[in-house]
Structure formats: structure tokens, C-alpha cells
Amino acid sequence: MITLNILNSLSEKEAYTHFEKCCVSKTWILKMVESRPFSSEEDVLKKAASIWYNDCSLDDFKQAFTGHPKIGDVDSLREKFANTKEWANNEQAKVAEANALTIEALAKANKTYKDKFGYIFIVSASGKSAEEMLAIINERLHHDKEDEIYVAMNEQHKITVIRLDKLIEGLLVTAEITSQITTHALDTSSGTPANNMLITLKGLRGKQWKPMSVGITNTDGRISDVLPPGRLLIPGNYMMTFNTANYYESHNQKGFYPEVSIQFEVSDNSHYHIPLLINPFGYTTYRGS
Image (cartoon, rainbow, N blue to C red; front, side, top):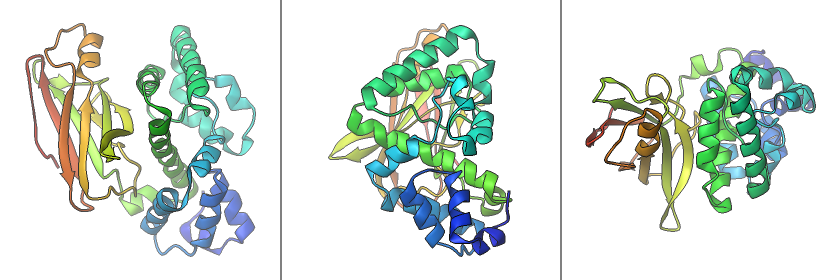
């Protein structure tokens, strides 16, 4: 771990090596090196996101994907990409705790994903169990090729931010930048958080709703990283889709609404919290804080 001042003073070669541990896209690395000196930790996150979303191409995204071992393939953590091995192990720690059947299903889903999309399954694995990642990959396998890469590139940048935080001392604490979009779901029939509910953020592309991010609620019923820190949505209409059918099935319940889709408008760079209060026969929402 290094300070921001040290990062700013490194040679180009040294800085390149450090940024390569965060993301292996050469375009992103080179532009991050060129962006120095950073004025603050917040400046690092804003420029990291701006470069990724504005300067990188689909080929750059795919290049970045090659810097990760397959989720669930524990053996691959011991092999290539030695410069990210320790960090990758930490990020996937919960996978090792899963039972053999889950690991087998996750490995099979990874192969299906690679065969369909041509690159490995990319997901920000920190804090997620193998069961949660299995639910996410099975949801994303329904996407078209043209759509999935935009979901994968968001996940890639979440991982990049996590690794930048491991690189730069006090990055996220000092910057205080979080996901512009957050959500939580509460099961009002039981008065408990609606955990393990798949939620998809969608945006309009070509006048059609397209997936941008897929997450699953934690034990508090929340998803705090719908988008990576520093990623700001263009003003316009967006949609949050809650997979209530999957939620009720996993809790051995029968619900009337198989899906809840909430449209909302983003008008500025402020934080937007989209909650859902759900029971088997009704739901409500509001703009939270």
C-alpha cells in the first residue's frame, strides 16, 4: 500500500506496474499514468471511472477480463497473473467455503458462460458467497452477447476500485464516494430484509431496456454497489427490476407478482436510493436516502 503522494511521484514505469495490479487494460493503465498528479483521492476515483467509461473500448474491456481467474475455479488462483494472486484470493475467499455441489455448479456455469460470451464470468466477488454468485451468473446467462459485456464492464470497474483501495492508503475512506444507485428490499409480510433477491438495473439503449448491473441482496436486504464508485449515470430514465419470483421460490413461498419493475428518473449527480417494500400480494416504493 502506498500514499497518494508517493503514487504521484513514481516513475511512469513504476506507476504502470502498480496500476496493472488493479486492471490489466493497457489503455486504462496508460491514461491513469498520464493523469498524474492526482489532486486528491476523490480525483483518483473520478478519473479512473471517466477513463474506463469514456476512453476504453469493447476490446479494452475484454483485455481487462483476462486479468482474473475464473470464479469458483480455486486451482486457477495458484497459476497465472501472479501479481494479482494474493488480492484475488482474498476477493474470492467465500468461494472456498462453499460445498462441493455449489462449486461444481458454479464451475459448470462458468464454462457455459465462457462458451456463450467468449470471455470469463466477471463479478465483484467481495463479500459474496458461492451461492450468491451462482444465482448471479445464472441470471446473466439469459443476456444477449451485445448486452452482457456492459454488465461485465461495470463489474470489472467495481473490482478495479477495490484494488485501487488496496493500493492507495485510505482511498475510499478519504474520498467518500459510493455507488450513485443503491437499493434495498424489505419483506413486510415477515418484517425482515428480503435477502437473496436478484435485482437488475436497466437503462435505455436504442429505445430498449438493457441490463447494466445485476446484484443480489445481502442479509440486510441491500445492494450497496449497484454501480462502481465514481460511475455517474447520464440524466434520463432508468429501471430497477426485482426478481420476486426467485425470492419467493427460495423462501418456499407463493407470491402474486413474479417481477416488480420500478422506473425512475436521474436528473443530476446526486445519490438515488430505490427501495422496495414487498409482500406476496402487494408492494410499494419511494425515493429513499
